[in-house]
Image 1: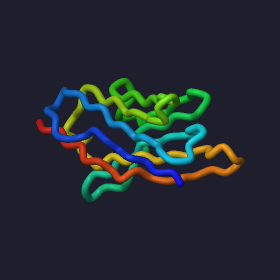
Image 2: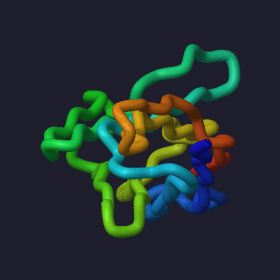
Image 3: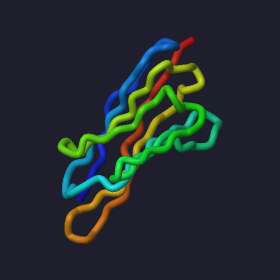
Image 4: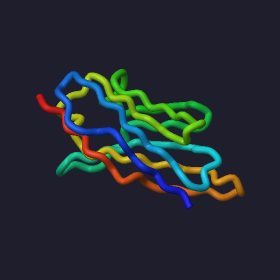
Length: 120
């Protein structure tokens, strides 16, 4: 009923920038919450940033001041702007969202994940 499709990511040098997108399609009335997680090889998945429908945001301490989460509700899309990237930001990044489908029902799910690699 709802799908999340990620785009962006890739290989960038340290200090560079990337923007990840997470587009919701299907029965989408509103995006209530969207979170971005990442998982590096051999490490646990960690929450990077989150945004709520009221506009409140939260960030992991490791990315504060460098990453910005946002949503464009006209496009049903969320974004993670990543600046001043560091090699330790290398990971698979995945979005998840709680979507209001407009009939008092909701959907929760994940994007497919995308690799971000930062070279030193």
